[in-house]
Image (cartoon, rainbow, N blue to C red; front, side):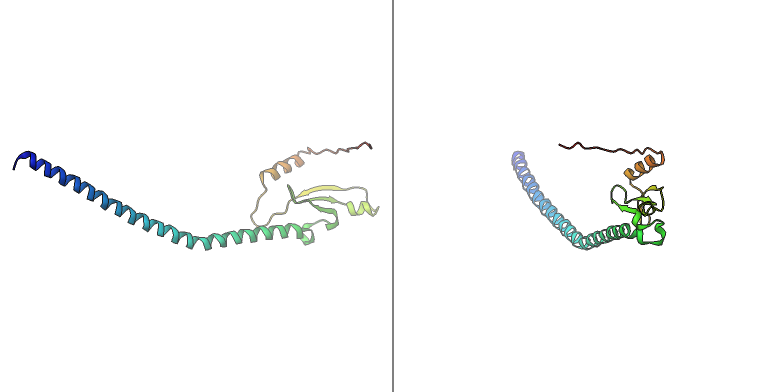
Length: 151
């Protein structure tokens, strides 16, 4: 057998071996991919319940916070007459016109204006609320009257 014939057989065997190796690797990749897809689907199914539970808990906390905001004037710790409080909700929960009821009954002539936000648990002021608080503390508050002309 000539060297050229041997090289030809070796070349054919290498091509066949490469092709078979490629087919084997593709099958391995498909097996691994199928396993990871199954793992992903199982994780999705297991996590879906946990994600729903977390979402419900967050909604519950939000709802409790909103209820607390609305009920705050009825609590003893509120410290002001509920009739003097005006709920605005955003960016702060209440503007309290402390003493307004006495002024309306002609028993008083002075009021204090208080901006109040109701927080529950470890909640903190938002950035916007902190800026408003700073403006109030620095007395950056003014009064304006807008007169509209009759047409």
